[in-house]
Image (cartoon, rainbow, N blue to C red; front, side):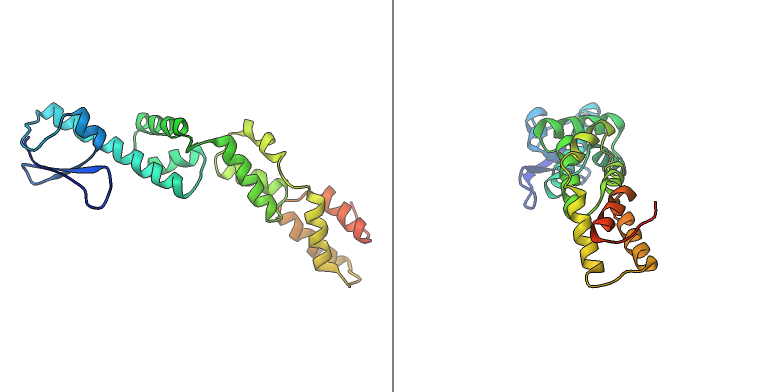
Length: 205
């Protein structure tokens, strides 16, 4: 297989286009150009062509993973799922995730803390925070350290109760409505009932 033309991509910096004799185009990175000593006119054996195609595929997957992580932080599990969607093999996936961790773009502990801070600031309770960590594939051994960074639930619950009940003499129906809303936000009943008592409402266990 002969390389008829080798030229830099006009759209993607660091990418090269290898135009083969069958008119197909192989998109390769600078690493592949160097590692395979590519140049226009070079003849590739079938084995070399296959190896180059495999290397170009891995390089492309790495580029997509890096682009994704620079736009949106995620857990290793989430990146593994995305790579599976891109039809990456298990070995490719493991190698790419390991490399992203080495480069600092993938860090489950840091990501877990970020998730907790984000949802805690939005007024979500511990149950909701745990649900988010689970949904995002964060390893369970990292949960407790991340959850320790959550805001004190009392302040958020008090603010919510004050907003909903200020100036009212709430009946049982109104109290249940507020309690249910807080439960949906992931707060436990113990914290909710304590807040209602601080507001002066009578609660039932």
